[in-house]
Image 1 (tube, helix red, strand yellow):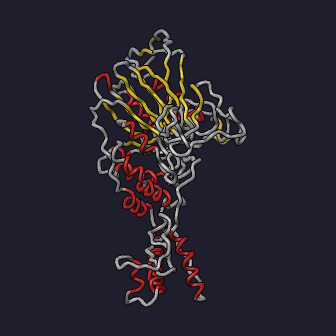
Image 2: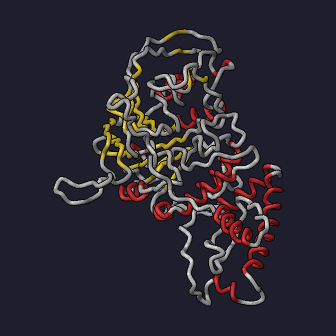
Image 3: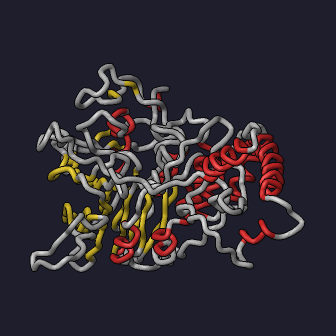
Length: 504
């Protein structure tokens, strides 16, 4: 796992210096208030940092006896202040007032908190998405990007120049700290917005996104998540600049969305599901950590239509069914959690098999070629599901009563799934299991990818095929090419699968 960026908490640094100063004066040091914005200046050796809030800062500058007239340090020698202690007391009093106001907001209703989120998050301008008539040549995707870690993947993906980049969830990590506050999540978005690699890439890459648990504010979040509306609001503010009046997404329970690109026989439909907002809780395992049932086990019971557990709400199912009736040559279905995978006991569609079967049935009846892309796992892999079961066509001649059955059809149907995870912190091999770490899953094609990765779909409309690859996000330590020269292996293929485009 990569080491996170250094984080300098201004409140902690101010506390340390204040205690040292006031201790020398034989007074009790004040209790610093975390999160309060400060604007502290250096005077001699009293203060060693100038910053704002508790966000990421560069290392504090060294103390120096030289003073510039344009520097805030020169305030220490200017009237009307007599000593630096007066500056500190003045700023601490101001900070205390701000803290009281901040604490009152935490106990306000959700509407006030949402307004604060909108002010803080809805500032970023992303590159415009392609026009709907554009024929897509490539689509990149990835998941699980921690804003506290280095993010070289933005530069690597930008070098591929994809027509779209899909963020499949866990786009930031900011679990909400209380039922009424998601400040950690807001700060996570702020930090991503200031990340140098992201700042450059978001001006080059058209980005679409959906949510997973960590940007929904809680680990393994489901429909019981009390933060989901606050998190959803912050998500829309960051990725969409907020939802304006009349935006159809404003009336949806969750972040599901769709896009259509291209014309005629080169139409690509992109569908992003929300597998968190309305999902019922998975069944906890009875043997924590056991292979195949590490965290959860399969639900046994009635279907959602019969009052059982669900992954998608009926509203989202109806929306999905309607979208799948739209004509398309290729459909890219985004699920933040894995659909086909059977070899583990973590979050995936297998945990509620009735819902997965419903999805398979819906996709089987849909025209065009469907490719599923997913994330969440901190591992990369390619999967293939084939369905050879008989499907009977029922003919209703009128009156709502069954009249006859057509002959059974045994036409095989299959779908591929490409899981790309993580962009910043993928699970490496456990030294204790050496080469036997891979999950046992007959539907997986090839080994699991245990290095930071992103996915790429390249559409070859002439050959009528899709080249799906998982690629390396960053350069290996001390990488040397075969010719002995140093270079970067970022962007090299880790896994590859050719998927035929089947025209109906």
